[in-house]
Image (cartoon, rainbow, N blue to C red):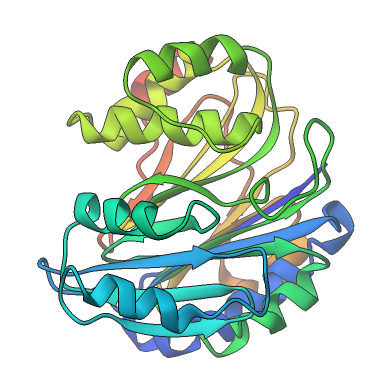
Amino acid sequence: MCGIVGLYLKNPQLQSKLGALFAPMLLHMTQRGPDSAGFAVYRDEVPPDQIKAVLQHPDIKFDWEEVRVHLGNFAGEPSISVAHNHCLVVQQTTVEQFTGMLAAFSTEIDIVSIGRHIEIYKEVGLPDAVAQRFGLNAMTGSHAIGHTRMATESAVTTAGSHPFSTGNDVCLVHNGSLSNHNRLRRRLVEQGGTFKTDNDTEVAAQYFDIKLQRGASLESVLLNALTDLDGFYTFAIGTTDGFAVLRDPIACKPAVMAETDDWVGMASEFRALADLPDIGHANIWEPEPAVPYIWEGGTGACASSSAMDSAA
C-alpha cells in the first residue's frame, strides 16, 4: 500500500522548522506502511568542491572512524556525523573519487545518498522509530520527501526502503507497482545504470537519474515517463531546487496536495497535511492523472499543458 509525503517550504523563514513540520506528516502514514520508513532532507548545501554522502552499514557497532581515516588518506580531511547505522560524510573531493575510495575500503557499506544538498535516512521499522532514530523532528532545510512502506514485491530491508537515490541530489519515492521494470532494468544497465535491489522503485529512480544527467529537463523526463513506465504509480521526486509529483494516466493510487504562499505539501492522505500551518486557507486539490506538478526555486506548480492534453 505505502504512504508518500512531501513538503516544500517557499518561505525561507520556515526552514528552521522543516523537521518539526514534516515528521508528523510521515507518522500519519504509519498505517499505510509499517514495515520500514525513510526520508530525504535537502539542507546545508556544501561548496562546489565538496560532496556529502550518507552511508549505511548493517552493523550498528561498526567503527566509522576507520572510514574517516581511510578517506582522509586520499583526499581532503572528511567530517563525519553518525546516527544509528548511518553516517553523514562531508569531504573535499568528487563523487567519482569518493565512490572509488569507499569501494576500496569495504563492499559492505552502502551509499544511501550523495551530492551537495541531499541527505537520505531510511531503515526497517515503524515510522516513529525511524524518525526518532535519525532526529528528523529537529532537522532544518528547504524541503523533504518521505515514504512508509508496506512491502508487497520485495524483501523488507534497509536497502529496499524508500527513498531511492541513484544520482547526485535526485531521489524518488513511489506508491504503486511497475509492470515493465525488469525489461526497463535491462535497458538501463545497457546505458550504464547499476542496481542494488530488486525493487521496482529503484528502476524508476535510475530512469529519472540517467535522463536528467543527460541534460533533459525535469518536466520532459516526467512526460516521457508516462510512456516509458508501465503500471500504476504516484511518484514524488526530490531535486536540489524542489520536488515534483506525477501520477499515472489512470491514477488509482491516492494523492492529495495543498498549497499556501509559504509552502506546498503532498501526501497519500489528507490527514498528513491537516496539521500544517494555515491549512484552513490552503488551496487543496487532487493532482490530475498524467500531469506533472513541479515546484523549484520558489516557483509555483507547473502543470504541463501537453500532459493535460494527453490525459483529456
